Image (cartoon, rainbow, N blue to C red):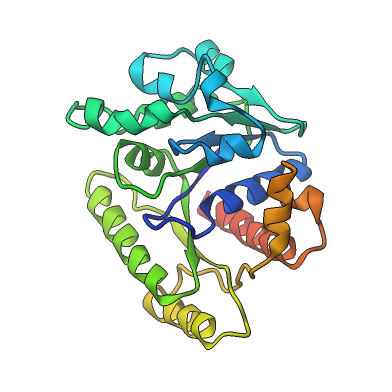
Length: 258
């Protein structure tokens, strides 16, 4: 079982789109996929038609009680896609930093919970909120690889700098260094700003930047409106083609790191 965490401390860079698209492509290959929504806004959950207000159990319950494997499985929601399940989010997650922030031993809750699902899924993808707190710390600590979508514009590069510093601080307590891949998103080849930002990423983080780009593609928005994963809605769109290339790259990295 492989865990990928999709994170960035800046919003609007394509985290949820990346999580959903990669999850859909993995499921398309026959892998059993669990998507974990750790964002109180629950965008990932809403994408698949899950109303967080109606849920009895969610990722929130993992933090407020000791959960068995059976309880975790009961918290999962199926989707219309055969190989994709979701561990949904609720607004109550927004209270965790206040209620648990100072409590010791809360940084590995998600990691311990996901370990109980060993054998149930091939891949787990976690979608993070754009805020450093209990939820992001848990998601990073649980990951085998961190995927960092970065919009190809210069303000987004500043947000990436904060994200890398956060990982460096956390790494002090990690046995193994974080493995991470920066994914340039919302690339517009017609603009000088996108091209320059992409080049700057390669200069600043050599070896950690995927050499491809995810272009601006309205098909992502259209797919979300009808609650279909992009690879199902528009399999030959330029955005999906880019994510297919990214997935091939990530799978190759997973094999070399084993």
